[in-house]
Each structure stands twice: as C-alpha cells, then as structure tokens.
Length: 264
Image (cartoon, rainbow, N blue to C red; front, side, top):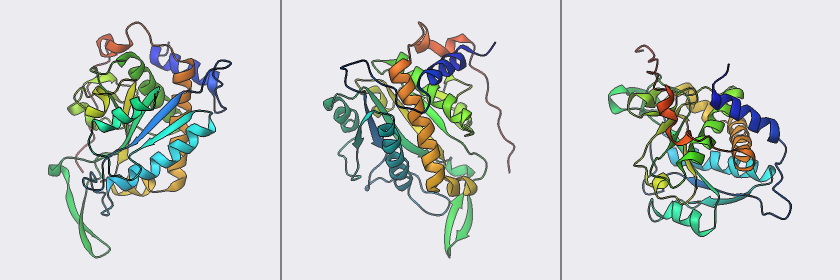
C-alpha cells in the first residue's frame, strides 16, 4: 500500500487536477501570498555563473503567480521590488492582506567547503555539482503546522509526479517531516514561524550546480515547476484535510537517513 501522504495527495489532485478548483458558492477564492526570498541589499546565494539567487526567485515567483491565478486563486506578491524592510515584514504583509497561505520562494546553495573554482565568461566563479533538486521547509512554531505540512507534502508529491527530482542534501542537518517528498522542519525560519497562516518555504533547486543552474534559468522549466506547485497548492487549500497526526509526521517512522551521493 502506498504511504498515507501519497494517497492523500493523489486524492486531492484527482479532485482539482489542472483545472480551477472552484470555491464554495459565494465564497471568495483563497488568497495565496507568494514571497520573493532575499532583497537587493542581501541577494542570497550566487549561482555557478554568478547570478544572484534573488533573480531566480523573482522569475519563479512570477510564473507561480500566473499559474495560481489560472487556477482561480487570488494572489499577493510580496517583495516585488526587492526592498522589503525585514524578514518579519513578509508574513506581516501576508496577514495584513488576509492571506490563506504563504509560500516563500528560494533557491539553494551548498556549504563553502563543497565549492570548486572555475572560470565562466572570463571571471572566476564557484560551483558544486554534487547536489541538485528541490526541497521544502515548514516550522513547528507556525500557528498551523498541520496544514503547512499537508501543503508541503502535496507540493513535493506533485513535483515528483511531474518529473522533478528532490534533493536530500538538507537531510544532513534538518529533520524530516516527510522523507519521501523532501519536506523538512526548519522551526527557526522567521518567514514561517511568524506567519499567521500555513506557510512553506520552497527551494527550487541548487543554483551552484552547473547543469541545474541552466535548467532553473529556463523559462519553460520555471513555468512547468510553477504549474505543478500551483496545482498542489490549489488542491491543498480547496480539498486538503490534515490528518490527526500531520503536525508530527516525523514520528511515524519517516526518519530515514538520506542516501548521500559520492564525492565528485
């Protein structure tokens, strides 16, 4: 029998599919806050070819907003200008607009000890081809951990159904909420723990990986990824119902040690 999380996700997708999931008669469609991670002053990680994480976050967030709207959801784009004042201001903006869900868009890197130097376009850059893939994070300090976990699982399941592979790089330091779908607990993350609604931080991929960087910069790849995320979020908000133990999913035997790739 398939794991509970997979069965729940499949049921939600069957209800929503890729068509808009209609809200109950007379009810407003759910409002999804899409947060662009990092700022112009602190643009996050650098890619293997010297692009800022912020630029990748902006592009994927724009595609996600479009995909969510195509499914009949309302959206709020947070930090569009890259000048938001603080980490706490992100969930505060979502709460002020009455958002039903917050997703913070990021892209991943690796530790400095894993970086190797190379030259690209005449400049010295740094890369690591050891890790690739997406991952998701939730906080047990969030007011609705149960639905945060449920939506993160749905997002991870939908991405894998669409052919996107997760990374288990973060399993070295972050406890799993759901190993199969690369959902981790990161309780201290301000954007998650200060949120007054279910919240998930999504790492779209590892931009220090040279081949993955090119995929993550491809508008078609971005649109496909956003499409899968939007389908999962719509399904979770319209049809998802957290299991009784959703908030303690890691206690159900999912603390499986990650399989680490060999050193390159």
